[in-house]
Every structure is written in structure tokens, then in C-alpha cells.
Length: 188
Image (cartoon, rainbow, N blue to C red; front, side, top):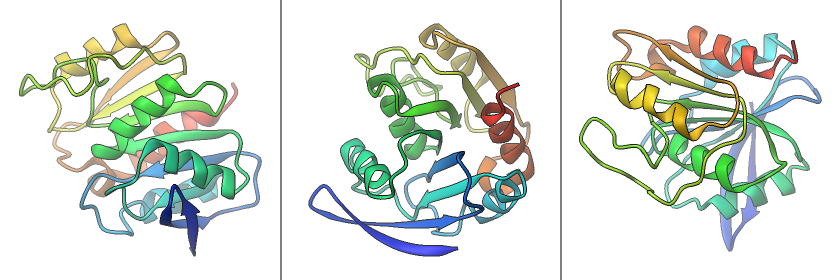
């Protein structure tokens, strides 16, 4: 993977860019504290499906505006958005509040911010609905009831994929996650 530092919102973001020079790109947002290579196994599979990947090395301290600036700096006007944990929280917000930048949303282990999770936490009651084809991939850390309830805040095709026994979907089930991403990027 190519390591790139991009100036964004008054600071620097480190991103890993790889894959074929394709018109389809996938933006990968990690969970807080994830290692920089957390998406490498997923990315490898996406490259085999003719998808370019852009993975932020860390989501810590990165605002939604900074993420959009990274896309501008890389000249990516249209991407598929993938996020895990805290990265999924940013992905939900970006997808809901940014029209015309994203083709699809794949959120991992994080329900829509207006839905209470299993601990009863509502992260952003004012987060608007998403108008993108959306897949919510859940492992053992998010209950199915919260995942299904997120469908009320998706005004497009919505799927929930449950991967029983996967505590960390990105690390434990990279092939399954890559498959769900590829399904969302296909126009058929």
C-alpha cells in the first residue's frame, strides 16, 4: 500500500491508498485504537474485485470535514463509504449529511446514531436519515434489535448481515466484510 499524508482541516491525515486505478473507490474508516493495518486483508480482496481503497490509518481526532478534505485532496468525488466502530459513527453522519459524495454505506458494529445501542446510548439524536443503499454488518458486539431498528433511518435499500461469533468483524471476518462491500459497489 502507498502511504500518503494529506493536509486536512489544519492538520495531517495519514492514509493508505492501494488497488487498481479504478473508477470505483472505497473509503475505509477504522475504529478508535485499531492498528494501521486493520483493513489490509479486506483491501486485498477488494483490489481483486477491481476496487481502489483509501484507508485512514486512524480516526482519532479526525473530523467529518477533515475526511471530506482528504477525499478532495485525493480527487475522489464519489466513493463507497465503510466504517467500523467509531469510524462507522462518522460514516453514518457523513452519509446522512453529505449529499452526492457517497454511493453506498457499509457500517460495521454501529447502529444509526439516533438509535439506542444495547447499552441504551443514543450518540446523536439529531442525525438525519441516510438516503443511500446501506448494509449494517453486525458481529457479537451489537445486538440484532438495534441493527434492525436502524432501518427506520435508511431511506433506501437496507440490509443487516449478522456474523455470529465475530467480536471484531474487520479482523475476524475480512472475507465476509469484503463480500458485503463488493455487493454494495456492484451496479447490478
